[in-house]
Image (tube, rainbow, N blue to C red; front, side):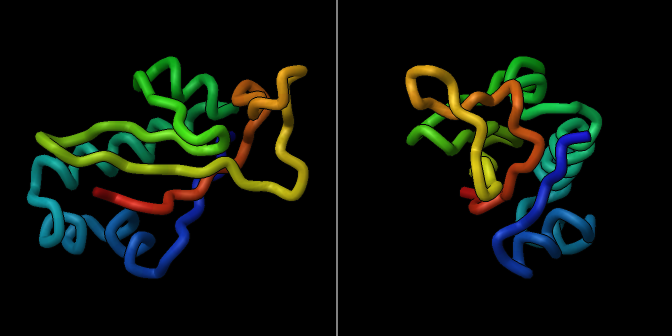
Length: 104
């Protein structure tokens, strides 16, 4: 199972309490964010989530997923020794932990 954590208490509250998410993002976007997070936890690796949701890899160890009418959830791969491909990029097919770092 892909493990999702949160960089701040505020992000955790938005992602774990639907009423907080609705107040911050609106009902539709809140539902889509919670659906994204539920889907994330149903996959084994970040690569499976990227393929399923059409995520965009940015900055080497970061990725984002659009949701709602104009939001995006930004994540970073986390771990002491991130799995790397031969070219040095993150091996997303082996990443089992990501952290939500921003909703913009």
